[in-house]
Amino acid sequence: MIIDISNLSTVMVEVTSNCNSMCLQCARNDKGETVNPLLPVGPKGILAEKIFKKFFNDKVLQGIKTIQFNGNFGDPILYPNFFNLLDYLISSTVNREEKIQIQIHTNGGIRNISWWSKLGTYLKNNFRKDSYVEFGIDGIDNESHEIYRKNVVYDRVIENAKAFINAGGNAHWQYLSFQHNHHLVEKAKEISKELGFKKIFIKTKRLNVEILKLYEKNVDKKVVPVFENMAKEGLSNLEKLVDTKYNGDINQYYSNGAVECEWYKKQKMYLSFDGLVYMCCHHSGAYVEFGDSKKWNEWVDKFGCRYDKNWNNLNYYTLEEIISHPFFKNDLEESFNNNFTSKTNKRLKECTRRCGEHTIIRNTIDL
Image 1 (cartoon, rainbow, N blue to C red):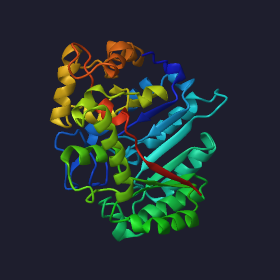
Image 2 (image 1 turned 120 degrees about the vertical axis):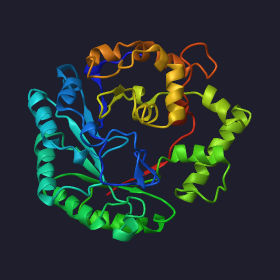
Image 3 (image 1 turned 180 degrees about the vertical axis):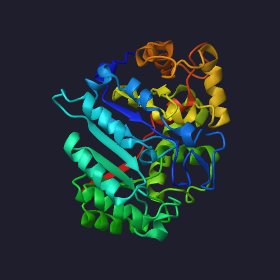
Image 4 (image 1 turned 90 degrees about the vertical axis):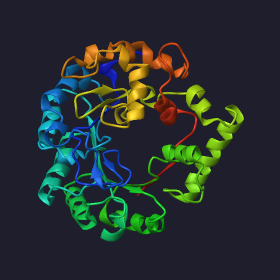
């Protein structure tokens, strides 16, 4: 696996693990009730500006096309000095012929309208014309929106989005479709168009993983946490795949199914709030010490036990040193062609779960 940092297409950077919301399926909390006590939050959950600059060095910035502020645990708008990061990118790329595209994913329920107006102006004047903010809005009023996206007030999100749009910013609306809110989709489309959103995405929440959960637990297929028809279609495809190629054994599929790393294919990488560099957001969400203990133990058993603890940490190594590590140069790619019983570089289950032969369904509507 050869990673050319001067030719990266996209980097997703999670600048903070802090968030104002308690979304029901978010990895940072337990059923929307309590924050994971192991997750570093507060000051410990903020990416140091020096680490941001260390990743986005001259080599990266000379070729990077898109920087996406997003992540597994936090909302980027909670970063204390967000405009400092943008100012750094602006000042460091003044000689580029093509400007960088900025993508920001947020629940939009924090900061005031002046802040959002400033952001709209910043993106319009300093970055590529198709830069945008994607607001996570899962309803059409306070009541429907807060069922999933707890602690976020719909009315405030709309006020902030309007301020951003009126300042010249491109706004996208991401609508997570569940059984409780799918009947409101058409109304959401109408509202998004009236307010000036450029696009609306009707999306099922991590549908490919939800389908795997349905298969593994063998639950009633009519009782699903996402839009029923989409889930049924995906589950049906998965059942056919596992039954015909893997003897009806989902673990055989995880171990031996074909894997094509979407992030490597698209020349993407991930920077976490703690300064760790990953191939993808999926590894950053799964193989962390403060996450699922089974997944962490899988990582330690298959790879971590052989590596220096800080091998991918920008607090200890340069980006060039990290991408030259055996994991990125050889071990990860070799694992795609191995399985759970291989002698070395065993397949990571998350690689099949996220980049295996089953697919995710997403509907995009351009307004």
